[in-house]
Image 1 (cartoon, one colour):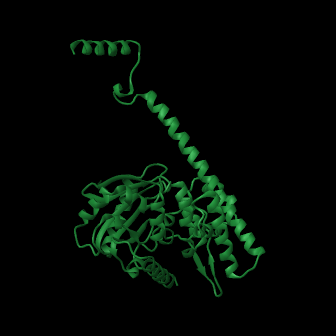
Image 2 (cartoon, rainbow, N blue to C red; image 1 turned 90 degrees about the vertical axis):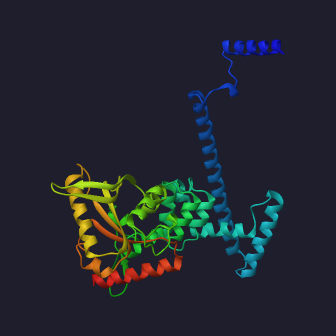
Image 3 (tube, rainbow, N blue to C red; image 1 turned 120 degrees about the vertical axis):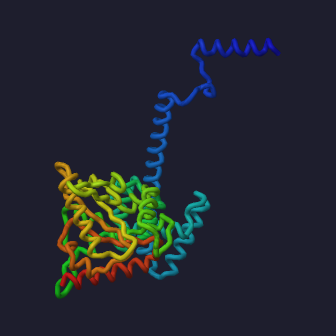
Length: 366
């Protein structure tokens, strides 16, 4: 036994002397290993993206061919059903799973939803079929374009995309196209916008169901603040793109007093600070005045050269749009008040609330 142990030690020493290092003897991963691993990981990513795009393109072409065949054949509903049934069976026999009648209907809908899909190469090349299936079920064409662009640019997972659609992320933005309207005697005409302004960024309401808090929340504002910071990644996704976290209970001081802003962010797209004040009660004039002071102080004391004016958002449990209308907030381009929801409302509830607020806003503007 002792002799065997000596031989093993001698062999290991010899291997080390020759520069032979076994994988299980490596302590940690060397830069060399990491470089090779990165090359392989990137190659796999590109291969997956290429295969994904090729298959998505094939699905669109199949959908196009189905529509062409339907238009050339009998227009009766049973013809279309028989066509998909027979095609599904034949494709399944040769190519296996993946070509059920339901999937073929999805291919057909894909083509009908995006007949000019080839013009969307840049976006579709980075979106999976799962992403596109979710997006093509959105009825509003402007909303579809929004979700395609955001999902591609922000690298959303299908889960994040699904949540964004369910919570009407597009419609909750203050500057959603259907809200940028001017009234005439005969029709509603969209008012074009060419500059990315704060209304493209601010939402109302904000949906914070990921905090796991009950609604109505009757606890301390500090508890709500802590919950948001602990789930900062999810909060940033809900707030929108371009934001980085600066701090909580951020102190700003005058010559005689100190003040503390609940949450401070910086938006590199808007190039400005974004202040958030949390209110677990209904919005008051005092809340608006306080945020107005914070914004003015931040502009005076913290705003840097090249920065745009600071934005202030009051996140409140409830608000009266009349108070907002008759306060400094109406004329200000820097102050906003948005409700927050601690539970995930149904799509119908959200639409009703957005419609009600839109009507109220039009009436106030009149």
